[in-house]
Image 1 (cartoon, rainbow, N blue to C red):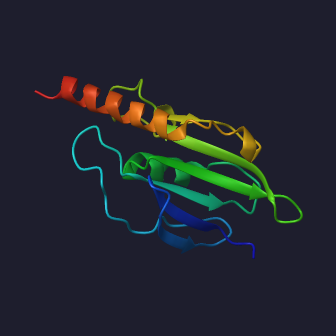
Image 2 (image 1 turned 90 degrees about the vertical axis):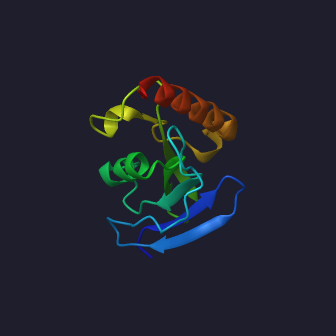
Length: 141
């Protein structure tokens, strides 16, 4: 197809939106935010294809940071259309403020075979959200 295709998935694994973009761009579908309040994430992750074979790009990292997504992932396929590599990004808990570039606030897995992704994603996500909430309380007057 040669286009980026993406799905927005909530924490229960339910698809909340689907998006088809161009070969170089895709838009995150509109979604209802479950994470209201300081230190909360959006409660959804965005998984999409990258026909070029590259991992996450600047637009992906910006979407992750600005929309406060739980995670963003870019999937590449092999010649037969099977998943070849995936790169996932999540906000880092060790960054206290929200200023600066998106790049410095994000942990990236690098390109990995899909079976090498961390299996404890949800546990790590909940710990991240706890830490973000704690840091937000510390920064509040």
